[in-house]
Length: 510
Image 1 (cartoon, rainbow, N blue to C red):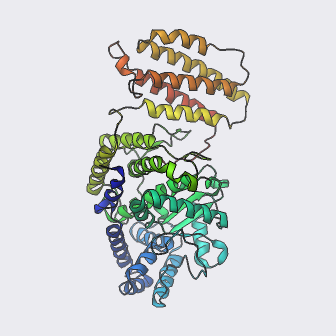
Image 2 (image 1 turned 45 degrees about the vertical axis):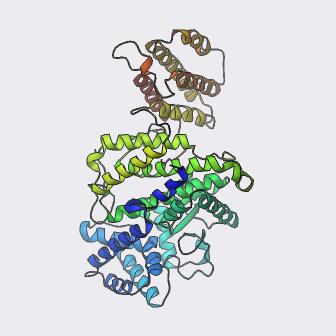
Image 3 (image 1 turned 30 degrees about the vertical axis):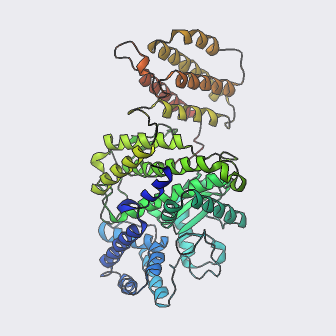
């Protein structure tokens, strides 16, 4: 099957068909509005007006991020009480203003308001508009700005003309490579915010959250490569598509009826081996986050495969894939998707609702059909080496200090010894002599450079020795010895120590 045919596959059925997903999400929000209408008069008014609108108005009104947040908070307060971020009076005011706009024949929600010249990513019928707070200063835009500040610890500036150009170029490229799937995904996003990349946004390449649905955020400083922009537009739009699915389907067993996130507590976690854990072990993902990443990586595997195939044809228009910021390779996306699918099935199956299980099986079957050379089940070496080298690269941006130098010297010695132990377990005696020569400490005063060079050597050596690039266990002759487990122990221990002296430089969503 030609890979381009999977563009059609991923945009069909109950998990891919956006027409169906929008209908189901709209029905879910109407039920929530009906539930609060007995206690909130504005809810009754809005529900009545929604019964008389056309499909496009319903799409924009129920996709308005503030409308959805107001409905969610009123439902939560009715069920559980507490102090919501948006005051109940403001939520009711939002619903009343929405009903008023509908009655006046206006086809958009109150957040967009009466902007004279809204900037759209593409076709206004099914793509998002780009945030421009400077065009007005009303209660609703202020409420949204406060909500973003509270949720992400950073304000949202107005997008510049250069931002508009970069976003639209990325969207055009996305449409050329993956037309059906990208159009479907983008229809679930109603607003794009361009972040400053500073303050609370520092380190966030792109982001979105289930609690602020309908909005995606991209870092202005990284809108330099159309391929990268296209990937991240798709990435975050796919999150929004999954959020819409979750609002109307049993993605998780523990979902509350009103669709709010429940604290995972001691629920099963999936460790994203390629991500730096940091001091708070942020690479240990609860079921929804692991499912969201799996959903994205299956789609990215297709997008990256097609992009790599078409890159020579599109290079003159959009530039090279890897400059100035590379997009995710298809092999990386396939490997991460495979790992996440396996771990969701093994560790989180009991956390998934009926719809979540069917979605996992559906996406897994597509992944099997697309992937020409899958990693063996349980393979982890290649993913761990991603993190191992990523940590080394990040050290280049860290200011030298005595504490850092001491830590790196200690870790270099420990990793060299662990590497030798792995070579012995894998019975690769010929490599030991070279390792002893390369890893012997010298008079190097540039500790960061020496440490990164050592890590590169160890990673290259391990991946070069691994069977098919995925495992060293097949080389072990000693019963019970697992070279792969030794490597994981080494990487985890080093990550833990580095987290004590190096502040996290990036907030990763996948």
